[in-house]
Length: 468
Image 1 (tube, rainbow, N blue to C red):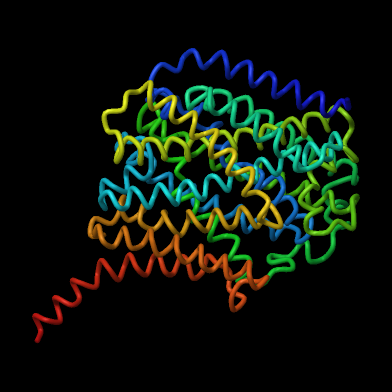
Image 2 (image 1 turned 180 degrees about the horizontal axis):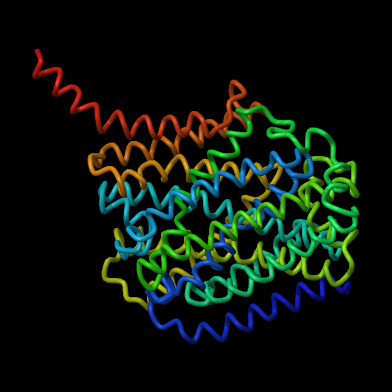
C-alpha cells in the first residue's frame, strides 16, 4: 500500500469514527435535518465552504485552469457574486425557520411548487453527488491503481454509509476538520509550486500567453456560460439554505457569509492555480486527463508530506460535498414529498429511518448516473443549470418580490427544468449544444421570462381592458 493511499484511508477512518461518535447526539428529525438550529457562525463558515468546494472545483475547475489559465476563474466568480448577494438574504432566510427550499416555495406558490422543487432538487443534487463519486474514483485510480469505476463505487459506499448515519448535526462539525485540511493542503501546494519556479514572476513567465488573458481560449459567451450557472445555483442552493436554517440565529447566518466568501475566493483561486502552474511541469494532458492535475501534482511534483496533505484535502473536498448533497436530496424527498403528501402523521423515528433508506437509494442512482457524462465539468454545469434555472428565479422572487403569483412561480420552475432537460438531451444526441448555445441561456430565459410574464401579464391585460 502506498503512503498516499494509507494517508487517505487514515483520514477517512478518523472522519468515520468521529461521525459515529456524534451520531449519539442525533435524537430528533430536527437534529438530523437542521442540527437542532444550533450552529454558531464559525461552524457555519466551514460547513458552507466544505459543501461548496467539491469535485467540480477540484477536478473541473483545476482542469479548466490547466487548459485555459486564469480565465477558469469565471466559473468561480459566479459563486463569489452569488455569495455577496446572499449576505443580504441570509438573515431573512434564517427568520423563516423552515427545513428545506421546497418548503419555502410552497409557502409562496402552493403545493405544486413544492413538488416540482423537490424533483428539481433531487435531480440536480444526485448528479452533484454522482460526480463526487466519480472524482473519488479518479483519485483512487491515480493513487493506488484501482480501476476508476471500482474507485467510484468504493467512494459511493463510504459517502452513503457516512451520510445515512451522520445527519446535519454530525456533518456540520466534521466539516470544520474538512475545511481546515482543504485550506492547508491547497495553500501549501501553491506555495511549493511558486517556490519551485523560483518566484511568482518566474512562474507567471513560464505560462502560455493565453493562460494570462481574461478569457483564455474561451469566447466571452462561453465565459459567461460558466459564470451564470454557478451564480444561479448558489443563489438558490438548497444545501446553503438548509444550513442557514440550522444557524443559531440571524446574526450567526449573516456573519458566516463573510467568512464563507473569503474562504471560497481563497480556496477556489488556489485550486485553479494548482492547475495552471502544474501545466508547466506536467504537459500533454487531454481534457479528461487535465481534470486529474491536482492529484498528479500531489503524487509527481510535491514532496511526500505536502502530497499527503493535498490528497487528504482532496478526499475531504469529495466526501464533505457528497455527504451534504445526499443529505439535502434525501431530506427533501422525505420531508417535502412523503411527510407533506403521503403520511403527514409520520413520526420523527419513522422519518429518520426513511431518510436513511433514501440516502442509500439516491447514492446507488448517483453512482449509475455518473457514467452518462464525458467529464466532471460537464456534469457540474448540467446540475448547476438544472437547479439554477429551475429553482433560483422562483426562490428569489419568493423572498424579495411580493407580486410574484403562485401560477408564475410554478410556471417558472417547470419552464427552467424542462428546457434544461430538453436542451441537454438534444445536445447529447447531436454531440454539441443546439445552435451552439449553452443550456444556461435558453433555460434561464425561459424561467425568468415565464415568472415575469405570468406575474405582470394579467395586470397588463387588465390595464388595457380598462383603457378600452
